Amino acid sequence: MGSSVSFPITQIPRDRIFIVTGANTGIGYELAKWCAMMGGTVILACRSEDRARKAMETMQEDFEKERAKGTTGLTENPTLALEFMKLDLASFESVVNFCDEFKKSGRKLHVLVCNAGLGFAAYKQSADGLEMMLQVNYLSHFLMIAKLLPIMRQSGPDCRIILTSSAYHHRGTFDVATMNYTGTANNFPDLNYYGRSKLYQVMQAYAMTTRLKGSNVTVNSLHPGFVDSELFREADKGIFKCCLGCFRCCGIMVTTLKGASTSIDLATNPKRAGMSGHYWTDCKIKTSSSTSRDEQKQEALWKATFPFIQKYLTESEISGMEGDT
Ligand SMILES: NC(=O)c1ccc[n+]([C@@H]2O[C@H](COP(=O)([O-])OP(=O)(O)OC[C@H]3O[C@@H](n4cnc5c(N)ncnc54)[C@H](OP(=O)(O)O)[C@@H]3O)[C@@H](O)[C@H]2O)c1
Image 1 (cartoon, rainbow, N blue to C red):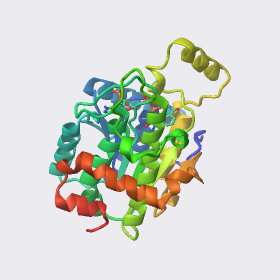
Image 2 (spheres, rainbow, N blue to C red; image 1 turned 30 degrees about the vertical axis):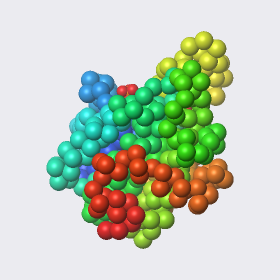
Image 3 (tube, rainbow, N blue to C red; image 1 turned 90 degrees about the vertical axis):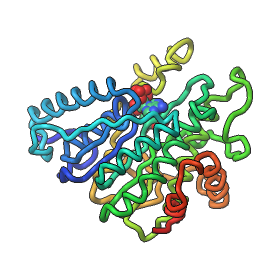
């Protein structure tokens, strides 16, 4: 008997290591679960240990149900290789601690999925005094990549960085002078700043691909679709709640498994090896916004990003991001 999923189920060796941020719920949950069900070792990089451990238990139960259904191609191992590591993307210190701890373990890293994200929420400031979506969705993931890239460069062929962006990147204004919102909370244009953070991720994938050309590491971004996840938890009230209800009834929103399909495909499908610098939707390459494809703007963003995080990086981590080994 087969599974009805839209990505191929591939045998993955247990020593292939995945890190998935925001793996305790939504798209990240399905992604982490399927990477582990195919055999890989998956580190759930989450801010709440409690939520992550509950998710790990449920993943194991889902795995047992999937095996009982007779789905072929799943790992023979009766227990999924799932681990928790604490990561709060709202704090650069937490990102640094996460990366230091991972480095200390001496393990390889093959796939890093920057999936965690915040959206459609009122203005909030991070522990570092920055607008929250800028930091959680973009800057902290950028810092994490810069710190873990040297490990990935030493982890053998076919290492992959995947950035979960959004079609909403089309709605983000490109203006590096106002990357960090400094206006009043009441006037915060939340949808525009969500779009901006997602635009930066698409642009980062392009800028990094140019720099890592010919290396063992690929970088891609994706739009998962309009997914019925917890992303709208803060917006799930008032008129928006009614709209969400309608979207759910009309089937406009897809399940978290369907929403995770492109991420799972990019993380596990052997056919994606070596493919880099693309923006994906529905497991296919799509054209991202013209702004995101503008190389001058990509370089302007690259330069504007470092001042936010430079103090947490060593010289060699910075030159590693420029493509030096
Ligand atoms: N849902 C959609 O329609 C849609 C559309 C386009 C793009 N996306 C993107 O898809 C990605 C996954 O979203 P989702 O829909 O699965 O949403 P979700 O169900 O809300 O999951 C988001 C995940 O991010 C984690 N997270 C939030 N803030 C964090 C922080 N400070 N540190 C560490 N982790 C944090 C959450 O952890 P907690 O559970 O602890 O809060 C959760 O695990 C996001 O990047 C989102 O922008 C979603």
